[in-house]
Structure formats: structure tokens, C-alpha cells
Length: 162
Image (cartoon, rainbow, N blue to C red; front, side, top):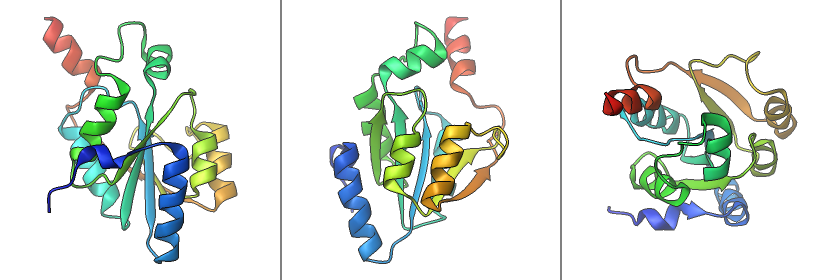
């Protein structure tokens, strides 16, 4: 079945209602987060694997301002709505929500997912303490997925510049 990616781009309030519907149906929500500035195979594999751990996958996406603060003034390359739309166009992603802070502890706490997945460059000790505390407070299980070697947005941007 073909889905309209725009339907998956949600506000936090919309996502909270959707989350409650999933919970009432006994479905397991998986959440991850990131910039997802230029989509690549590593992102696709990571999102596919994350989705396979539950019934629905929600991606918290850094806002344009947040990406600029984290990655520098030339980023993001792709605007926040377009990044969310492209994520939701993937079969493995059910919804995307933009967050403006450097951290998404508020969103993690309020959405209270069953499972949180982060890429392989993270460990429990490397997780931001406020995000980790929000996940623990919400009773969310935390898992880490290995990266697909050779894929990164920074490497792609450097290759384009050459």
C-alpha cells in the first residue's frame, strides 16, 4: 500500500495522541532521533533495523536551527520539513517529529516509547545524561545498532565538494 509521507509528519501533540492509540492497541513504539540531513544507505539500514524491533517507528528530527548549532552554519543542507517528509517516505518510518533543542529529552519523556534505538557510535555511557534520564523515567528500553561502514553525511558532503 502506498502511503502519503506528509501524513507522517507530526507535531509533538499529534504524535502523543498517535502514541496513545498504539498503546491502546497493544502495539510497541520504537523511537530514534537525529539530523538525517542527507539520507544515505546507512540511515536506511539503521531505520529498517530499528523498525523491525517494534510495530511502529517514530523519528525525532533536529530542527534546522538545532542542526546548525550542532553541525555548523552550512548545515543543514536539506530543510527540516523535507527531511521529515523523506523519512516518512520510507516504508520503515511511520512518523517524524521536529524538535528544536539540542536534546530531545522532553519529547522522549512525553512519548514514552517502548524502545529507543541509537546508532553504534553511542553506548549507554555516551548518551546525553538528560536524554538517558528521560528514557529511564519513561521506562523505555535502550538499544544500540551498529553502523553500516563507509556511510556518513559529512563524508558525502566532502566528496561533493571535491
